[in-house]
Structure formats: structure tokens, C-alpha cells
Image 1 (cartoon, rainbow, N blue to C red):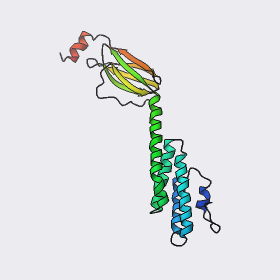
Image 2: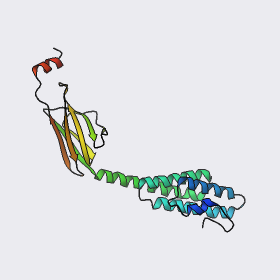
Image 3: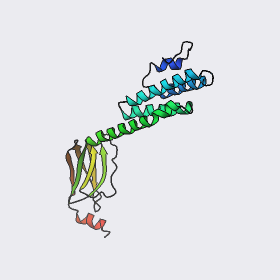
Image 4: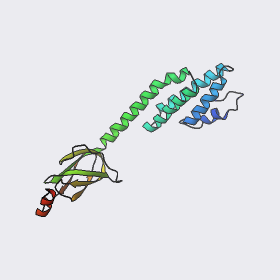
Length: 202
């Protein structure tokens, strides 16, 4: 129990009900424990170990990288509020390793959901812009000449192509599927004599 026989501290009571332990709750508990130091060292030490055990379990049982991040942040904040805590210091390395592992798992999952999009133009062109389904621009490499290959998450994409000798752009739509190769292509019609001379500065 977070509460000794004579305690009425709500922070220690509430932390039994909220898991994972929120950052603010963890800090409040740590401060209560700190207030016991010097007068009730044995009780403080017992609660300090319990707090560390709870936070370590929260990180260990986190199902997502974001959840583990939040619990690791609670460990850091508690360590600041409860200076020189050996139990909190002892759980930090394992907690940090768990966070790193979860982030790697998430990156691997995201990578597995990606597919290859090959963008082409006839006779050739430059990729001006690629937007996802939410109309958010995709970061493109410095060299944008077609054919251009992009590794993208599965989804729908809108591609805009341009040709340096034409003021017109060409649009294309593509649907990328995980672990598959998709293509988007556009065609630039032959430049008329007037437009050619205009682009040539004649």
C-alpha cells in the first residue's frame, strides 16, 4: 500500500488507481516522500522503492513507444523531485532501453507498411510536388528528374510534374500499397514553336 496506517495523503492513495502513473502524480508522490526524509526515513525508503517499482512496471508494460516515453518522463521528473534516489536511478537504464526498443519496433512496423512509388514522365520531366491524401507535402530529394523512386507509406498520393521548357504542369494520381511497387506517370505534349522560341528567349 502507498499509505501507512496514520497517513491521509491523497497522492499515494490516488496512484494506486491510476496506471500508468501520470507525470504530475508521480512528481506529487515523490515530493511527499521527500517530505518524510529526515523524520521518517524507513517509511520514506519503503515508499521510494514502491514508486520506483510502479514506474518501472509502467515502462515495462507499455504497449506503445509514446506510452513508454511518458513513463520515462515520469521517472525523470520524479528523480528531480526526489533527489539522490537510488531506487529511481536503478531503474533508469532498463527503462531507457525499453523505450529505445519500442521506438525501433515502431519504425520497423512503419517501414513494413511502406511501398515503392516510381514517378515517370514522357519524354521526361521534374517532380515538382508530391502530396499525400491529407494534402501534406512529401519531402523530396534534391535531384527530382524522372524516373524518380520514392519509398512511401501505403496510401494515396497526388503528383505534380513540370518540364523546364514548358510553363504547364502535369498531374498524376497514385495509390501505394505496402511492400509493392506502384507507378505514377504523366506526359508532356510536344512544345509548340511559339512556346519553344519564348522559352529559348527568341
